[in-house]
Length: 116
Figure: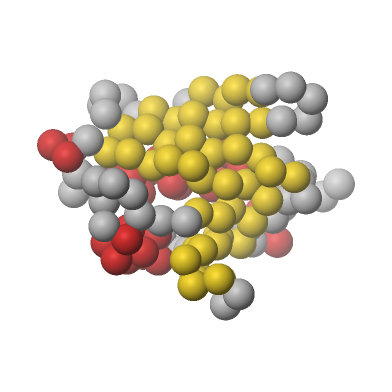
């Protein structure tokens, strides 16, 4: 796992597993919000639990930040159909945002949020 910082107060996380071709990028957007910009698992490595493992690692890392409240994603991409992406994220604990049907959110449980 690699934690990168860009500029003043900006954070970005890139997580790569031991298998090449699996990567997750997420950035801190402010006010407790983290945004997943990319989860990619190469086609030959799909179905092995790598995407789920990357999300678990992200939740663990983000939960250690006192400013973490929500992780959001707008699923689907050029090589992964939206319906399949929604199913994957929902199986990982994300829920559909009632204000935007294309947005999925994961709320960091209060018990995981460190006291400030």
